[in-house]
Amino acid sequence: MASLNVRKFPNTEEASLFMKGGVTGGKIQPKLYVNTLTLIFNQPAAVTVTFNATGSLQEPLSWPDIVSAIETQTTNAVKVLNLNGYMALVEASPANGIDVDKTGTANTLLGFSTQVDTVGTFYNPYDGVAPRVLSLGGSDVSNAILVLVEE
Image 1 (tube, rainbow, N blue to C red):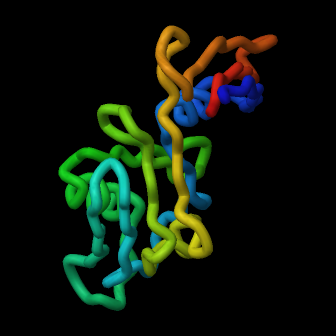
Image 2 (image 1 turned 90 degrees about the horizontal axis):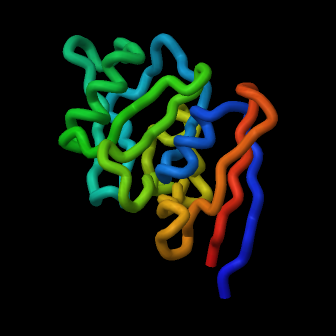
């Protein structure tokens, strides 16, 4: 049976990411020691991203290197965003939502759970089937309120 739920977001960018099935990780660091570590996706496709430096394995990877590794190894199916200083992942063509597996060895450093999979839900338009967005509103540009029909 479907139910109505209300969610409030501090801005429209976070509401948009949520509706598209995107997920957020940890605070972006200028450099991270993630060489040979993995980030595993179950959705939009089963892909294991392995981070590798071009030089020594002892060198940290920069934010652009991490973005490039994820986007390249997922064949651009996943886009990496800077959402208010935090890593955000969203499908390039949103349809299902992102699912980051809990077993990735880079999860802790990138701010994703190692206890449960980090899963985003794609919400259909208001005239679609559940889960769907019924309405979007807010009192001003500093927040967004979504009314959702969920199963």
